[in-house]
Length: 255
Image (cartoon, rainbow, N blue to C red):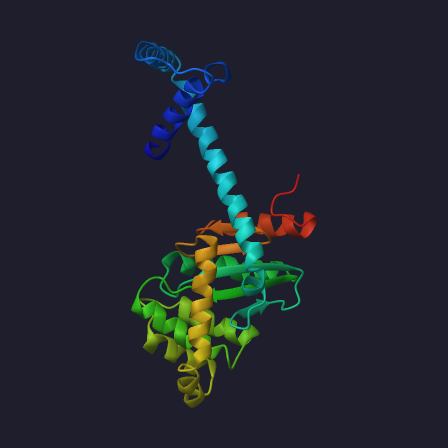
């Protein structure tokens, strides 16, 4: 609440101070003092106004953020939905695309793994784009480097199996854990070591960081459906509803 209280008060005070009939004149100190008393007394007698103002301010801020993110998505849509650095699971030709930005050491990402598996199973037209967004330290960077190199050899169900093994594993993920998951997936380990040093890996990392900056992403998991950015482990139901809405009306919210 503290985040909005001062802003809400400023909004209310500003409404009094910049009313249309007052804009043409300057208030003297006595008038300003009197207006301040009126505002203060009104808010003391009607504190629910503050709650309403805070709610409205929050609503406006969220609407503005959503609009800015829509514009940002449009500016980098090819990199978000059709990058050569991404991995696609589910139906590669699906009508609805869900993009996940994740970190192999993100506890919330681990919790959403089952949600994602259920979504792909129950939505045969769902195309899922996985983007490594390693923000939780060196181990995450190492795991992402291996995973991006693995993606040069396997995609689809085979990569999904690797992804589940690494993300679903216990403890911290790093190079050793990622290489173990890669070996279990049956990739060519000699080629993998070579691919890990490829400029493509650095380019893929740089690209996802540019996208994250554009979309103001600061944590994982984060999702994109259509023109909406969804932040956090919001759960199966919310993602499922947004996917269903997008399929129905081309937006994540119909009506």
